[in-house]
Length: 81
Ligand SMILES: [Zn+2]
Image 1 (spheres, rainbow, N blue to C red):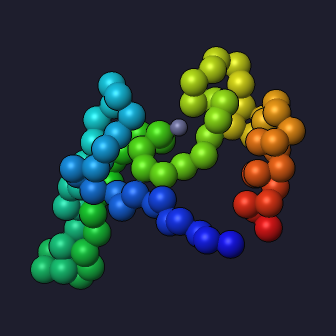
Image 2 (tube, rainbow, N blue to C red; image 1 turned 90 degrees about the vertical axis):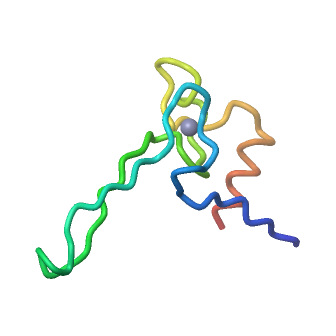
């Protein structure tokens, strides 16, 4: 089986869902001031590679709802194993 990695790297210039903003990386802590470096990342939940249908597009539906079609259920099931 050939596996394609469709993962988007989270970056300020990455493609995002239309109408949302790109991720924001803001310096939060520094080695000099705090003894460690940390970046605050702000982004929307639909940013980057993810699977969340049908909640992404339909009200009152859950991300955890099983797919309605049996072929989609089989695809998700085989992808999880
Ligand atoms: Zn989504």
